[in-house]
Image (spheres, rainbow, N blue to C red):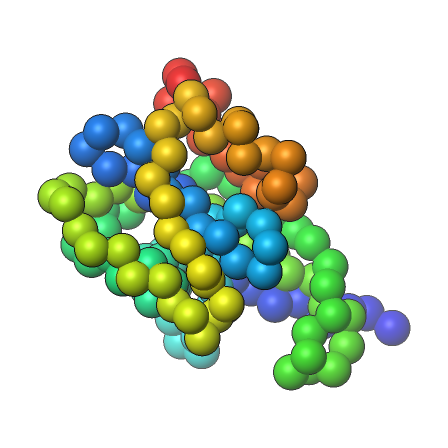
Length: 141
């Protein structure tokens, strides 16, 4: 039986100090992302999800970074699914207030220096590390 594919989008957000935004959810460091709503573009989904999960606004959407795939058990679908996540570079300006979306189990949001982000890799999912590595390489960090 073919597994259902869930489409999602998210981003690597940088600020004016070239720091990257990480979220801490369900015991691991992660990047903000979420599921595509019916009738929504993948780009609009990426921006909306980052806004909802972090509280930041006025996001400048940049280039596509990559698409990742991973399997998990979806409690709403009640089946194993494949999650296809589209990742984008994003930028914000100003000193914005970060508000973790606790309904999504986000406990903490942190700005991390680009070259320091690899220190978090030992507590991160493999596909998130791959997205960050691709971003860091493109950014020359």
